Image 1 (tube, rainbow, N blue to C red):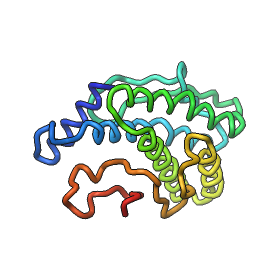
Image 2: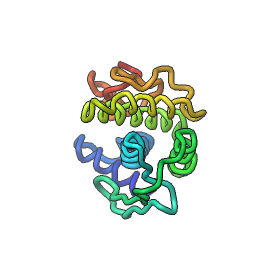
Image 3: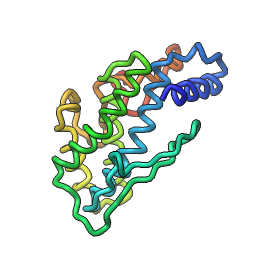
Length: 192
């Protein structure tokens, strides 16, 4: 995690034409966590919407420790087995997968758990919206499952339900990359 945060910090600095120490470590850490959450939760939610279960929790999860770019992932899937009940699936995803990831980030960088769980909420809402756009016949089921995930204790502080036009209730810190420029916010920014 430390190496990945440092790599992303350097990449953000390079993209902005500034030294790495200008980029706040917590901004890089939020970026890393959001990317990893998207890589973990998006496929799991998509498969769950289809009525199957992609087990993204250890020991079924495999990753390649590659610095730079998306993290290559592989997860186990029993094509013949039905998915667990929604509440069990949500518990598995959030408690066995995302909470340890968030804890690992917090051990490396001083960063609010609210920021990290806001990144999770953003990912879930965006994934649900993208599933519905790609497969309108699955939009209602995707929205229902995203809403069920938002009922988990970790996400109950979100004021807005996952839907088109979702606005998160915490900041991902991206605006800190260019605080003097308007428009340097994410698409579901609480500051917008």
